[in-house]
Image (cartoon, rainbow, N blue to C red):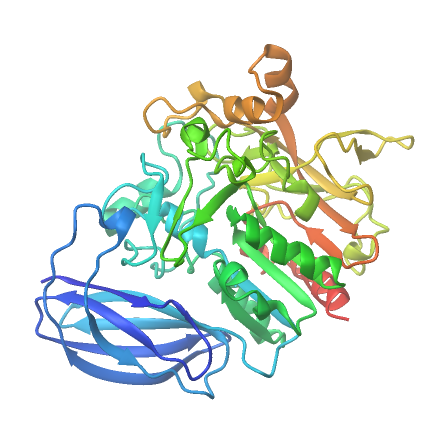
Length: 485
C-alpha cells in the first residue's frame, strides 16, 4: 500500500485554509490535525477518498503536482503553532505539517522554524542539496524521519569518532528512516524546544523560514526572535528581516548551530529554493549585478555579507564536534570564560569550569569566531571575520573543520568544508589559510546592536537536547527571561 502526503501552502494565517495533497491506493484515508506544543491538541479530523498519483522523475526539484484531496479549514481561533497532519489507512501512515502564523494577538516570542534546512536535507523523490541537487521543491512529502521519529530521538553525535558509522545512519536505516533526517526536521530540535518552553510557561508564535521573505510582518509585535537546532539556509531577504528586527530593538536567541551558513534564493512564488553550495562558481548570478545573491556560503568574499554581522558567529570558525572525525578530543561540554556575565546567573559556574558534558551539548555542527587571548588571558574576538565590535565570548569548546579526505559522506568530488571555507573567504587553499581555519571553536557569545537589540548565540546545534540538565536549563531561562523584558 502507498500513502504519501503534503500540505500547500505550508504556512497560513488564522482562518486561512490550506489543502492536503495525497497519493494513495488505500481508497479511504483518515486525517487528524493536531497542534504540537506543551501537549498534543487535536483540532480537526476528516475522512477522504484518495487516489494514487504518479511521482514525477524531477519531484525533488520541481514538486509532485498532485491535485488536492481536500481542504483543511483552519479556524480563526487556531493558535499560532506547528500542526501535525497525520494520515492513516490501515497500518500505513503518512505525516505532513502546516504552520499557523501569528494572528492579531501576538505572543512575546516568535520561533521561526528552520524549514529551509528540512527541505535541503529531504531526499524524498530524488536528490537533495546533499546528493547532487541544486534546487529543491517545497511541494512534496518529507522522507520518513523528518517530521516524526521513534523515541528516543536518534542523534548525529557519537561517543567516539567513527569514520564509517557517521552517527545517525546506523540507527536510522533499520527503522526505514532517511539517512538524512538526523540533522534536520521538526522532531529532533524544534519539537523538543517547544514542548519544554510551553511547559515552562513561555508563550510562542511560530512561522517558517520563507515567511520572513514572503510575510515579513510576522515579526511585528514580538520581543524575541528564536532560532532553534539547525537553521543553516537563509535568503538575502530573510537576513534583511532579521537585521531590521534587531536594529529596531528586537532581541534574538540563536539556540542553534551551523546557523545561516548558506545563502539560498527562493522561487518567485516561494515553491522551492536554489542553492549551488560547493558549486557556487556554476551559479548564473556570478559576475552579474546580482552576484550578492550567490548561493554559496555567506562568508564568501564575493557576497560581501558574512553571517557574523547578523548572528555574531560562523561555521567557518567552528565546524564539527563529536561527529565523524570532528575534534575527537572534545568532551561535549563548554568551558566557561566569563562567569560574571548575566547569562550564567544562578548557575554557580566559575571560570574554567565546564557544563553540558552529560548530554554532549557541544556536538555535531558548531559555530565560532576568530579569536585571540585578551589582556587577562581570556579569549576575545579579532573581528577579522566580521564579528560585531560588541561581541563577548562567554564559553568555548574545541571544534574542527573537516578537510575533503576526512569527509566520507561527500558527494562526488565536492571539496571538504575546510577547503570550501578557505576558498570562499581567502580565494585560495594555501596551507597557511587551511591551517587558520582547520581547528576552531564552538562559541557561546552575546552582543548588543548599537541602538538596537541583544543577540545571544549558543553556537551549537544540540543545545536544546541538553534542556534536562539544570545548568543548561538555567542558562536558557536566563536568556529567554532577559530578552523578553
